[in-house]
Length: 323
Image 1 (cartoon, one colour):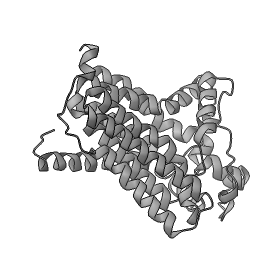
Image 2 (cartoon, helix red, strand yellow):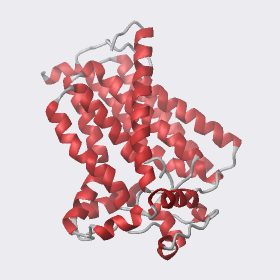
Image 3 (cartoon, helix red, strand yellow):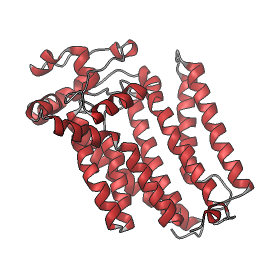
Image 4 (cartoon, rainbow, N blue to C red):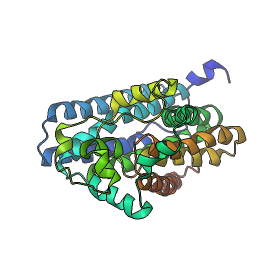
C-alpha cells in the first residue's frame, strides 16, 4: 500500500463517534458523577484530566470528520490508547473513598495456596537470567498492544475499530472494578505490614494507610539488569497503590492473545504467545499481584473479550454492517 493511500478519503466507518471512543466517554461520565457525589482533595486536577480527555477525543474526531482517512482513524485509536496512561493513576484518586481490602485478599491467597506465592516465587528461582525474563515479560505490556493494533491497521483494517473496542472496553471494565474493589497488591501491602508478618500468615488491616503512603517494595531479581531498570522506570512513571485484583496485565494480555488468534496469523500468534506466558508469571514474580489476581485476570480477560466481541457484533448487525 502506498503512503498516499493512508490519506485517501475513506468513509467506510461513517463520521460519528465510534464505539471504542464511546466506552471511554461513558467511563469519564461515570467517574465524573462519582466526583460530584463525593469530596475529593484533587478535584481540580481530576476534572482537568476529564476535560482534556474530552477535548482530545473531540479534536481527533473533528479532524476525521473533515477528511476521513486511514491515518486519522489510527490517530483516533492512538488518542484513546494513550488516555489509558492517564486513567490508570486516576483510579487511585477515585477509589480512595472505599476501604482497602488487601488483608482479605492476602488471607484468601494463603487459604488457597497455604503460602504467599508472590513472596516465595523469586526465592525459589533467584537467577539473574530468569529475573530479566520476568521483567521483559512485564514491560512488554504496551508494545504487545501496539504490535497487535498495527497488525490490524495494516492487514485487517476493516476490523481495527472492533479490535480497539474490545481492548478499550476491557480496560475500562477493569478500571471500574479497581475503583470499587481497592486492592494494592503485594508490592504495596507487604511493605506496609512487613514481610515478617506475611511470612507468619498475619495480614493486618491497614485502614487508611494508602491514602498517604504510595511507597512500594523494590522488585526482586537482578537489580543491574537492563529490563529490571526498564521495569523500575515504568513503575516510577505511573504506579500507584491500586488496581491489583484482577490483574489487568494478565487480563488485557489475554485479550491481546485472543485477538491475535482471531487473525489466524501464525507469526503474530507465535510472537505474542511467549510474552503472554511471561506476563502471567511475571506479575506474581515482581510482587505486582497475588497469584489469585493473575488467575482472576486470565478468567476475566476471556470473559471481557467475548462480551465485548458480542456487543460489537450486535452493534454492527444493528447498523447493517457485518464485521
